[in-house]
Amino acid sequence: MSTNTLKFVLITVAAGLAALTVAAQDDSEIQAKIENAMSAAPSAIAQDASILDWAFDADGKFVVLREGTNGWSCLPDDPSTPVNSPICLDEMAMGWLYALLTGEEPNVTAPAFTYQLQGDEAFSNTDPGATEPAADHWVSDAPYMMVIFPPDVDLSTFTTDENSSGPFVMWGDTPYRHIMLPVGDRVQDH
Ligand SMILES: [Cu+2]
Image 1: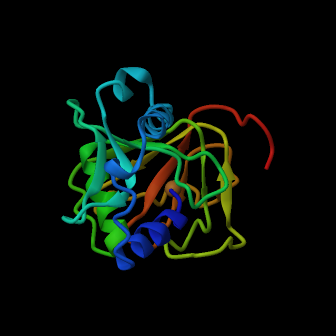
Image 2: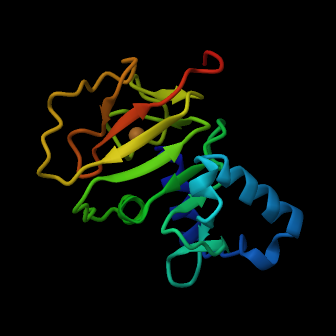
């Protein structure tokens, strides 16, 4: 999960820049965002998912580019990171993301899942609020998933080494802890 995202959304909201609304974008732009967002997950999930944009509406919810029917939400590439980083989240994970973006305690009552099949970048594996690359900066174009567990689930058997080839814990000492689960090979080295 990228933290640049957090900065971008908060700045957008703070500045009242609801300019990135659907009306302000032309059809081809919206179509490109929808296609990019859908590339984050298997098509069986992405085809019926809601597609959201990296901007908040007046209610503090992500702008909806396309309504969905299966409970999943997909966002296109986060424009504030240099890597292509679309993401699809289930309903529980979406609540987690809103909590992350607003600095609130997430209410995760069952395992939650995300797909990032194009990879992503995180400025720190320990600090969700990092605003520049730290020593444990993580970036990968390998497809991966996040699995977010309720707070009473013990994750101490998993490594926190972001360079591990298997599942590892991100942001382990925070309420936003989750398992990063690579599900494919890297395309190229970063
Ligand atoms: Cu992560």
